[in-house]
Structure formats: structure tokens, C-alpha cells
Amino acid sequence: MTSPERTRDLEDVIDAVADSYDGPEEINNLASAALPNKRQVVQAYNHLKPLIYMGFYSQRSLNRNNLRNALSEHLYSAYEILVDQIGRALSYEERAGHVKTPWPEGFHEEVVVRLLRRMPELRRILNEDIVAAFEGDPAAKSVEEIVFSYPVVEAITAHRIAHVLYTERVPIVPRIIAEYAHGLTGVDIHPGAQIGPGFFLDHGTGVVIGETSIIGHHAKMYQGVTLGALSTRRSECGDPARHKRHPTIEDNVTIYAGATILGGDTVIGEGSVIGGNVWLVRSVPPNSKIFGKAKE
Image (cartoon, rainbow, N blue to C red; front, side):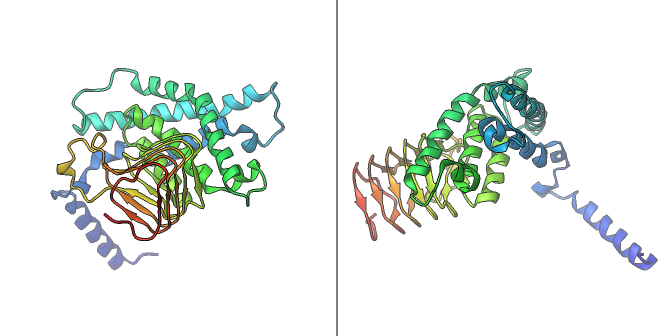
């Protein structure tokens, strides 16, 4: 039980902390309580995953006769949560003055329906990613092992979903999904990154892929790879999402562990191999093999 003296001390602290919210600091924004709820967004994402991998998530026997019912349990829940949370994000952005033109009425409902309509397409792309992982890693005993245990599956699934919402200009929610996967896997993929099908991260821990990165078909990367930007201040970018700050990786490129590739003008040509711990801030032509210390 707290003594009267300690209660007075704690009340004094509460007063002091409350008074600090009257200052000019950016973190004093109490309206941020209206932001999307991180836990709810993650719950919605975890309802979307079974739509993609239902056979791996169901706790009962499945066949084509009961598949539709199993899907509906998750689809309706994902829809209701995402509509609410995206609506909160849009309202907050408008109230905070972050947008010049308000979103059209009903946008939060329509954008969720568009995401859900893309589920068959996302399933096909993610299947290609998983097959690439199986073919690219002789240690994998089966596709099922990859889906159940490889962090790349969580990382790229979250990215494919978050990227759809990002391209729809949904604020905040795509980044929540991306950072949830980052925390689980150690793979940091900005939802703005454009990644072609057949993408394989072997191990993946410590990989960083920046917002304006473009990665072609059937690229393969190992742990600790960074696709980053040369140091740039926000004031130099205009609209950061439109300012190309991160590299382009063309089709069938392999990048080994610890490589760092920087800059929006840097293009790694198709079929190239970039060795471990290479530092690159310049383009290389197709079918290059870069090992050791690359020249700037």
C-alpha cells in the first residue's frame, strides 16, 4: 500500500508530467490518441494471412466444400478491422493538416475491398516467392517447411500486403504492418519498395530495403544486405516517396551477405552477382561479378 507521503510524491510527478505537455515539443500532440491502434492493425493482418495460406493455418480438416466458410471467417474480420483502422488514419491525417485534399467519402471501405480483391493475385506472387525459396535453398526439405519456418515468408507476405495499401496512399497502416514483420523477422522492408515475384531472402536477418528501392524478378539476397540511400535531408527530397533515393536491382541478381548498395541512381544490371561485404554507390552493367572492395 502506498504511504500518504509517497502518494503526494507521485501526484507531484503526475502534475509535472502533465504540465510538460503544454510545451512546444512535437510529441505533445494529444490528438494522436485518435491514430490507428497498432494491435488492431496487426490483428487484421493476421486474419489476412490465412486467406493466403489457409491450409497451413486451419485447425480443422479442409476441402473445397468447406473452404469458403473458412475463408469467410477471416475475410469479414479483416474487412471490419481494416475499415475502422484506415478510417482512423484518414481522419487523423485530415485533422492534423497533413493532406491538402480530403479523401473521398467511403474511401476507407473501398480501399479495403480493393485489397481483398487482390488476394488471388497476391497468392500467386507469394507462391512464386516460396517456390524460389525452395529451389534456392537445398537445406529446405519441403515447401511446407518454408511456409512454417522461414522468416522470409513472414517478411515478404507482410510486405506484399503493406505495399498494396502504400500504393493506395493509405497513411500509417502499411508501416505498422511492415514494422510488425520487422520485429518478428529482423527484416526491414519499407512498404514502398517495389519487389518483383520470385524474391528470396536466404536467412534474411538484418536486411534493409529502403522506400524507393526497385527489385526485379527472381532476385536473391542474403543476410545483412542494405539497399539504402546516400545521406539526404528531408528538405532536399521534396516528396520523399517520389524522390528516388534507393537502388534498382534488376532481374536475376544475387547479393551476398553484408553487401551495401546505396543511391537512387545506382542500378545493378540483370544477372549480376554482388559479393559479401561489398560497398557500392555506382551502377554496374548486366552480368557483372563484383567482389572485394568495389571502386566508387
